[in-house]
Length: 180
Image (cartoon, rainbow, N blue to C red):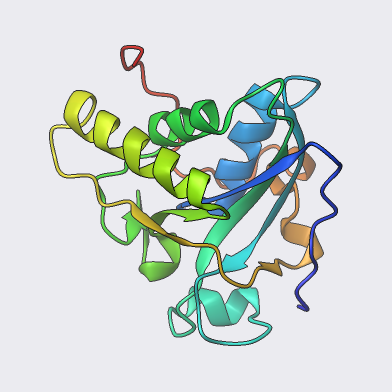
């Protein structure tokens, strides 16, 4: 699938996260921040690998180095990057290395792909705070520069909205952590 740059409206920003199977990640962000609450658009796709134009099958083989990820276009006047990151840490198990629930492999790693130096600073600050206050085991989330993005095949986009009884990773749920 060819890389398709997202059209980012003026004043909007882009966040890119990986937290296991991208279907559930996208679904939870849309459910909690869509419909006028700050998330303008989401796309699922592949990032962080060395292969050009990876397919779902290739990424699932674990040989491309890509992560299944969700790209979020958001209005920072309605939801902050920090709030999106705090939600990221509430909605998956950030202590698992290269897996979420039964899904295993580097393609299911926990990662924040930052697009600006400010995002890197915020990601590191939020990660340090949640590691200290929320998790008993070490946080395994990688914080790395956003590289080339590839949209996943169209049938993966908003998959759980189109297939409400489709597979949902059992580790994707909102944890009741104290506010930071």
